Image (tube, rainbow, N blue to C red):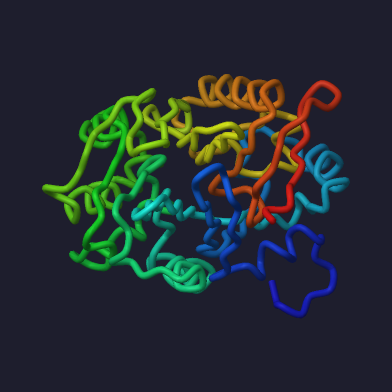
Length: 295
């Protein structure tokens, strides 16, 4: 859509203009910076079986036109004393000019790729993992790659993949190959680096995880639990075409939204409208997503 289009829904307009930006929040002893790699445009058909007219009705009060969807692709830099971690790596250069702006966003936050000590991977789909490498070279030459053991096993059994997941196989394997000798497999529940815990969020992929920044006011970076808050908060049963196990993805989404609403912790994710720091509340029969000022 042209940048000067005046008919865009307001949230969508913001998403389409955020590539390369960074926004920082303080979470306990950590600084967490949302990094916008760019956005993806797609239509409602990516949500399986969802009626377009119902989707428009649900999304419109939240500043989103379900007939003209744009979805943020975010990664997150986490600064701890003397350390820098990155949650996911964006899409790199493989998908056109709408994506691939992570390094610009990282520079906007005052960091270089060689400063990153560890890459904390929610999963290995292309919009999270293709930014790990450029050709046969790691983009983050000093970083340890941390991924769930279940996620690695999923991509190491290509005979079990359907065609949709097989389209991501080369990306996942190249991410692993360019970090050979500096990859750590972890299990959900483990403190993968001091103060940050890997959280099991299965369904989108079997090994899909989030990362919880622990402390008195914790934050969960939930990966792909939600792709479009304007739709899936009110309708958690609406699932994305790339979900490997839709039933488990729905169960995970409901569980995490209920937990976040009950406990009141901060959340953000790879595809919530940039920068995406928010709290969750119950609303009607579903949930509501309330962005918070990171300052």
